[in-house]
Image (spheres, protein in one colour):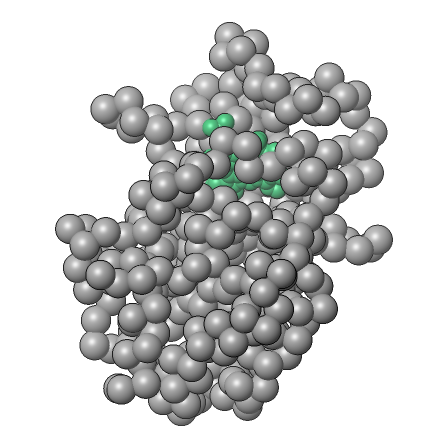
Length: 308
Ligand code: HEM
């Protein structure tokens, strides 16, 4: 049975480092060797700093997969679904590798990220790094708790991980989408709390969901809560974290799922809205500046990279 990378379903942590790389020409075989060694490196640091709850995820870009791994591809791996509608934009960025390092210690994340960069050496270019942090009791910088309706317990695995029946060769893996959203907090903080609550469809401090008949069709939780034709909820596992400093801040959005379809359906519902054009009004206060699709393979798959 293939084992998943532990960071995929890990519970929220206090700090996160998100490293986005592009591979340099003719370095594929070096990168395969390096990636095959990364899980053991993470295990060593997790042992050394056992109280830090260190976890990590290594993922390969959808656009890089064929070059990196010509032997075979996860069934549904596809480029990031870039979307534009009026001034609502979900752009696609070009990244080959994604490495997520999370723990409850910023210094441990730094140490491990530094080691990761050393291991990859000059085979890659570090294109973007985002330092995420837990804000208050798990809130986004808008002040609203983020992650409440995430799948819980064993259900996290059911939603995030591919099972053997779905795709035997890639069981234990996960489809990953990321977007770095930049918030306009001056605009957000200028509106009344009632309006902010209507935008999320939840109360701010107590984090209580509005009754369905009180939710506006433009509320984020209305646009993001979708059902399929059989009435099943279309779920993803969100592992997002706030990031930023005084000049620029927002949410580093992270979604894991056993199919890439769910993220795209929710994103389309947010940006295009319903048949009456009710799009997600949260998008008036935040904008995606990046977006990319990856596949986070199982530990077994990563170990196998050393042999090829
Ligand atoms: C800056 C961007 C975003 C912010 C600040 C944000 C924040 C939030 C907050 C505060 C909630 C309510 C609490 C919870 O259940 O977690 C929520 C719910 C949710 N969000 Fe987002 N979100 C963002 C973008 C997205 C995107 C891009 C997606 C997927 C494409 C998404 C999917 C969801 C889902 C599925 C829920 C649960 C809805 C429900 O069942 O009630 N969010 N989000």
